[in-house]
Image 1 (cartoon, rainbow, N blue to C red):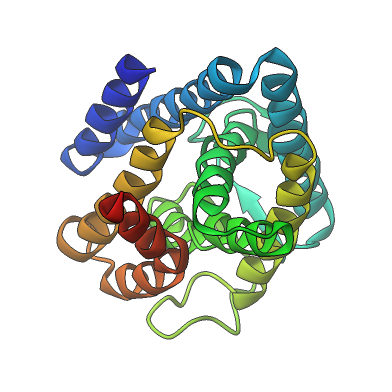
Image 2 (image 1 turned 45 degrees about the vertical axis):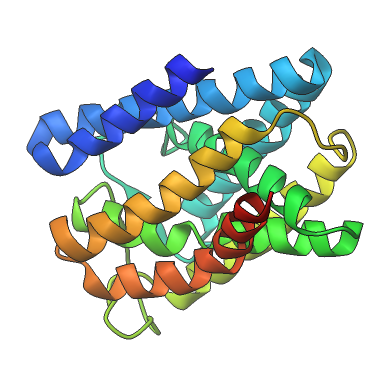
Length: 239
């Protein structure tokens, strides 16, 4: 798992250093590495049944909701993917559902460490996953990987992504966290996953603010994802 985490970090560091087709290919590689890490960690710490459930809920469920979204505009708003991220099925690049798995697992494990009650864990995990999209969508839209037909109303400084998209993410994330609670309610050797969540948070703030020219999403993402990332960092520091 440490090797996967190191490869993922190196690939993400390379993102601001590339452009065009090379950046699109690197984006796909980052998602695949993130997916592989989360599934491998779930398998190693909680067994194959949990890993299979994680994939079914997040990748399977993620694909289903993305396909619904592309076809109907619900629950994210009317949007469409370009062809930059590889082969598509029903209008959805096959790599996209893997991204749900990549971040759903560390968000859940972070909430598991920070909160004691089930309701709090589910709610905090949902916020922790959905808030990642405050970074993800502005970044990917800026690259032209997907677009909305009507991105209004939008957050100040982030004009190309509708607020309804984030609310859709929160609803889907809530359902995913409820499902994950059913099979993975206990703590284990979760340090690598905590590291991934905190790295994603800190590196996203830095990249958006300093390298990608997206200061507004840096601020929104820092505030939103910080709801879970900051308590997690404090908890680990106290330990």
